[in-house]
Figure 1 (spheres, rainbow, N blue to C red):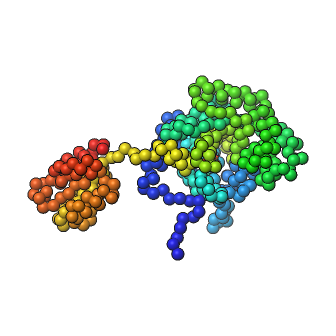
Figure 2: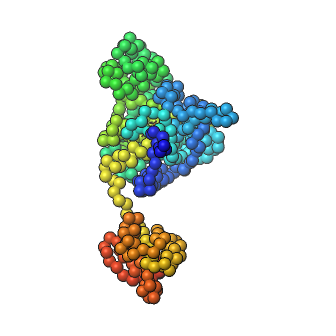
Length: 419
Ligand code: HAM
């Protein structure tokens, strides 16, 4: 039997790495330039860390999307379904609140959710995550939205749309959820099973339903943004003023609700048309209270994460994943047995400057050039008896077909230049 990868996981092959590198470098530059320090946390934690954070009404808990397992010591652990919880656990554990506030962190890596697999929805996926802890200022909210927009633009995207809303303070939410219960309880029969369950746990999430009948029912109701308390409304307006001043494009979505329970006030998402039903590239919001819930100090926080696979899908849609600028890549072709060892020895020296491969056996010139081509080399250098006698290699530019004798120093200079 041929073994296969687990459904919903994927391999990233060598030729796909450049695109991943582009995303990673964009994150490093954009988030690093904003003063965020990179942090790496474990792929698994005590399940409690996540259960407490994402909340009992989140899909992750309700739909049992978390990969939970018991280790040999009988501890209940879970693979991380997202980054925020682990980052806040680490923040509390290392007392990062003693650093100058606000503290900004970013991370990139795999996350795991046992979901129904479809385009854009995987069981192992990757996120770029950004968090700011220690400020209530709406400036931090606006900055997070701006950074998400900027980061997607740095990845080459032009067609992403930012939607912005507010889910209010806990008191606003409680009052709003009471209103929704009152409105929706009598109409339960018209709602989908998922929405009935959401009505019980967190009525606001009914707005998240894709079901048309659910949508028709909630379309008549006040939306989260219509029922904000004074403080969260003022906060929201302030966030908007900053974004307007900076020229960050966004659309207000009065019914935005996020899939995780820890949000309050600002909530936002980035969407992209053309990558299928899972159009959310990323999302985030404010989560004041979460750090305290995990045993840390009572410091407010805000952040976002985007899904790397979805961003790559969008980059592909926009055609920004063309061949990257290439560095020289030299393939050495020994034309006789003696040249095999010479090629290997030369490669060890030249590799200090660039990419060098060689054939492990004597090759005929035509075969050797074909090998070089197949390996994606930009240049081939051939050596047989006559080249040895002259102390050179016969260098061929595989793109132009140009050919000239080259000393070992010439080859070194070629590799040091950029193609
Ligand atoms: P989230 O909305 O659950 O937020 O996930 C953020 C992004 O991760 C989604 O917009 C999507 O692009 C990607 N994503 C989520 N699940 C999958 C999946 N199964 N397959 C592929 N991509 C997926 C969070 O995770 C929050 N921790 C974001 C945050 C940070 N809020 C504050 N700080």
